Length: 406
Image 1 (cartoon, rainbow, N blue to C red):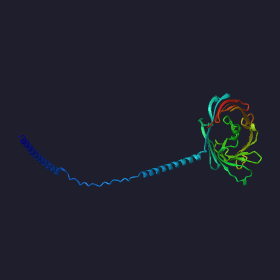
Image 2: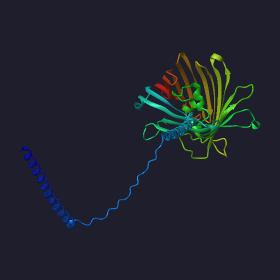
Image 3: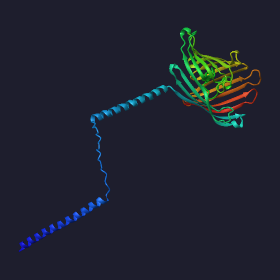
Image 4: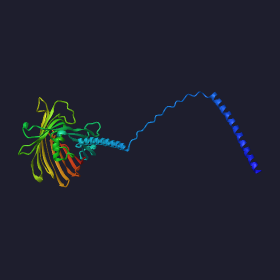
């Protein structure tokens, strides 16, 4: 009986599955027909889609060997570019390696001791500041440009001004021996340059940061001027070498523009005539200067001549200078002595008559004090300077000076 019941249930289940499948098939058919009908009614006509073929880029495969070669070429080109740049930099450095840039500062403090005005009783100041540029050129030539910083007399503002003090080129001239009358060297000098005497005389005492030399201090001659010149050495067998400097200048000086055709002619000769060993060397120099010369009046308006003799050694210097000219005369006597290492005592007396046609107008000046060589680049001094004109009152000023070379 259990067997009959199992067979009957199996038959009923199979019948149920067949009937359900038929019903589901009918439903799907009905839905599909309805969907197709909706599409035919509502959907727009679709445009045909043309599929374009896609072309893929084919990347070439680079071998490791080719990559190494490419990197190697890049390194080589980079190194070459760096080497070229370095060569250009080195060339610029070589062209300017002999440019010398320096500066000099004259600093001072002054205190009037007697007969000073209220405005000048006590003050600090910079007397001078030089900015110096020197360069050697090809062919043995050289150039120099120097700026001078100082207060301009009469300027509306009394702050420090800078101006050109020197701007010149020196060119050695190779003169054939066949046409030389005497054995000498010649160097041409063109531009704003030293006059023949002042710079040379300043180097004898080597105290320019304390006081100017006689000719410069009294305004007999400008320390630099515009024009042309020549300098060199004359060497004659059996005689000491003679140095010379000749100039043909405007005559108005570095601070004034030329306004006429007049010119100044100057000549200096100097020589070390003897060597006295520990006492030093005997130096003699002389100059002549014609001011205001023209083509029709070569003698000019005024003339000056001067002579200086000095004994200059490592431990001291003594000198005497004499000046004479058209209606002027003067002298300067001085010396310095090192009594302790780096410590010097100095003294100097000047007398100058600006016009021999007048009386009671001689200017007497005295300079004396101590200097100390702090280092090769720094010097300091404590000194007193007095001045008196004729029988007038004497002024006296105490100074502290300092020279700094950078």
